[in-house]
Each structure stands twice: as structure tokens, then as C-alpha cells.
Length: 494
Length: 96
Image (cartoon, rainbow over all chains, first blue to last red):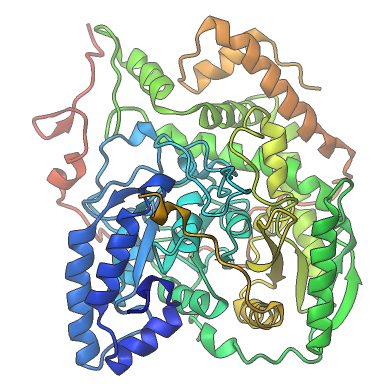
């Protein structure tokens, strides 16, 4: 029998519709793949009973002729989406034992469409990190190895990308604040899509930096990403920044025709000391799109180099404010100390509950918002952020999409960058600018480095023009052709 | 501009309500100075006459009627509380 876990969402959807496979068979195959995936630590909670119930309901729905794109499709859910009655902790100790009494809108949309939940996925604590080494539940391994050396899956959506790249889930929800979907997708050879800020509801997403956080998808193809995004997106009255816009049929945008389209190449994304392989990959992407009939146009985004420092003021400032809610009173961990006072309880709970990176960012955020420093740091950063956004607006008057590398390197080994916060932050140098401007972006797997590790190219689009990002991504994916799959070393290790 | 000493770290740790051991103040000061020294390159950007960004996409915040749309969920609200009594969140004694 063929391995059902190797199917893409679009293929499974068609087989389910024809009655060639059932949602139950598909789900059972994935439950067993998830069990065989323990060594990678991508799933921190498994929900096989729920999955089978949902699968049976999906089969009934398919029989009744009421199937949607995601009906019967087994997916993983990043731990920062609230799932009613199921562990939801954004992989932090401070939310110990938290089981929400409500469902996030993104996941509710999936269940309404008949999708199947395999479990909750590991991530960097509160989505702060670029290697998934900051989780309270331990690091995630990348299915791709450098020979026999482990590599990190990127972050913060490390569990999401690992589970999809390693054929344990057909798709996964993820979230992107400064690159947390696109950078890990690049490290694992998956298609990661972050829509325009406001396209997906943030209701029920554990907040990190509210002006940046946006839900998105990780899948093994562009088409799968279009199907899944259409399911999770949409207006929601419960999120005041949710956009009241109709959700387009993203799959219909995959026409394969980009003739005459203008592709921008920003000169500021040529970094000093960037590996030659990344430059070569970018050049290859340019040529492939040109061969498909697009016009390549050199552009300038002059404030690019200020995006990371801007981000590391804005995001920690918002985080310090958002994370003030974790006080040991209403949910999660409580550490009172010996007959401690209420104040002691706050200090002890937050000291025990937050990891080092989270504390570091809360402290920075508190500092830049504190009296006497607000104007110099926070206000200044919000002004530079406006300039960065203006750069993109000007560029998009000349081009339809922008093509860049997604990350400045391939996946690195655990511990290689974890001692140096600044070196770790540089991972997001290409993804952060679009996050600051709220723009949609995707990682398209485009090749491998000299060690056989995946590399990706980033496509950025105009606000609300996800369709063009999908269209160009689809053409690039086709032009790149089939790439190697990771060896299933974890399955044979049993 | 930034020169965070151990006293400043202790102050922002207090503002953040995070207990930091005395021997951790020094290393934290070093880390924070590194990060803040790096972000200070923003000073070279001319932001005269630039409005600070207040909304990332051109969407106006919606108005809605000031009506109660949800409620009567005391049990749900308290469900995850580390400690609750008489239908309230319970905390260590505040008034002696």
C-alpha cells in the first residue's frame, strides 16, 4: 500500500472525494506517523481520539457531498492557538496546566471545515526565538540533518515545520511575528505562508507582539498552502484588527501565468558576508522567474538595515505589556514562596515561569517604555517603522512582488548560536522588514546547500494581495522542480 | 546613550515583577547593553517630520454598540485559576 503520509493536501482531497481513501485511513496513517516521530519532539501533546472522531465526521460529510478543502485532512496546531480543553501554553512554564475554555478562531475555522487535529506542536516559548531551542518542552529536531549531525528546525514555529517536513502532519498552523513561519520553513524545505496583518483573526492566539503577530500555514506545496489559508482566514468580530474583507479563492490564483509581471530585487538584501550559495540561489530564482516571462526590476528599500533594530524595540515593548498578564492569579503557574506576600507571588511566579529569552525581552521592553526612554527608543522605532513601510509602498508602485532569500543561512546545529542573542536575531534579517510593514510573504523551497540542507526564497507582496504571492510562488515551485526529501531516519531508528 | 548598570537592571526587573538573583544582575546588564547598543544605530536615521506608525495596515478601528454580548461564565472564568474561593480568584493576604 502507498504511504498515505506522503500525500499532499490537494492530492488527499481529490482521493477522498473520489472515495479511493477514507479520512479514517488517512488519519490512522498519520497517528502512527506522529507516534514514530517522538525522537524529534515536535508534538508536545497528541490527540488521537479527537482525531479519529473528527475523521469519522469528515467521512460522513464527504459521503453527504458537503466536503470543503480541508475536510478529513490531519493537521498539527502550534501550541499558541487556544484549543478548548487541550493543553495551550505557547510552550511556556508560566501557563502550566492551562486548558482554555474557548477555541481560537483560526482553529475553529479548521474544525468547521472538517479538518482533523493530530496534536499540539512545539515552539519557542511565546514565539520568541529562531531555532526552537527556547521551548520549556525542549528543542525540536529538524528532519534534515547535516550528515548525521542534528540541525535546528528554525523558529519559532519549529514543531510546525518539522511535523510537515517529516510527513507526520499534512499541514500545520503557525504564527509569524518577525519571521517565525518563513525562516523555519526555509530551514526545512517547506512552504510557509504569512498573510497580510489582519487577514486571519488573532482571537485565541497567545499574544507576543500584537501589532506584528499574524497566523499562517506550513504545508508541503504552494497549492496546499492556498487551500489551508483559505480555511483559516476571514473576518472575525472578536479581533478588533481583523479586516472585514472577503477571502479570495487563493487556489484559483495558481494560474501558472506570470508573463509580464514585475519582480523587484532589493539591492539592500545583498548582505556582506552572506554565503555564496545564498547569492547563487537568489540568482537562480531570478532567472527562473525571468524564463517564465516575468520582468526583473532592481529596486531599493533604503531603510532595510534598520528593520532588525526597530523590531527589537517594538516587539519587546509590546511583549512586556502583553506578558504582564501572567501574574499567577488567574491561570497557569503560581509560586508563592514561603508565606510570601502578593508581591512576592508576582516576583516568584514570573521568575520561575519565564525562560531566559522571554525575561530578556520583557526587561528590554520595560526599559524602552520606561519614563525618560520612551521617546528615544519606542517613539523613534515607530517612526523608523513608518519609513520602512513607506519604502515598501514606493517599491510596490513599480513592482508586483519582491524576491529575496528567506534566511541568511541554512539550518545550523543546536547550540551554535544560542549563546549570542544578537547572532540569533540576525536569522530574521530578511523576514522582519515585511513583518514591520504587515505585508504577506512566503517561503518557497528552492534548493539545497553543499551539505544537502534546504534553502528557500522569499516572495513578498502588497497588502491584501496574497493571490499574487501564491501565483508567483506556484510558478517558482514548478520551475525549481522536485527537490530531495529528508531521509526518514527517525522511522528506521525504531 | 545606553549604559545600563546593575542598579538599572534591578530597577527594570522590579518594574517587570521578575525576581532576579544578585549574581545575575551583572551578566544581564552586559547582555542588555549589547542589545541596546546595537539598536541605537537608529539614531542615525533622520525622522524629522515622520509620524510614528500607529496602524500597520490602512484599516480603521471599527465602532460597535456598547452592549453586553457575553457573560455569566463564572465557572469557566475560574476554571484555570491556581486558587479560587467563593467564586473569586484567591491570592495571598494583602491586608494585615
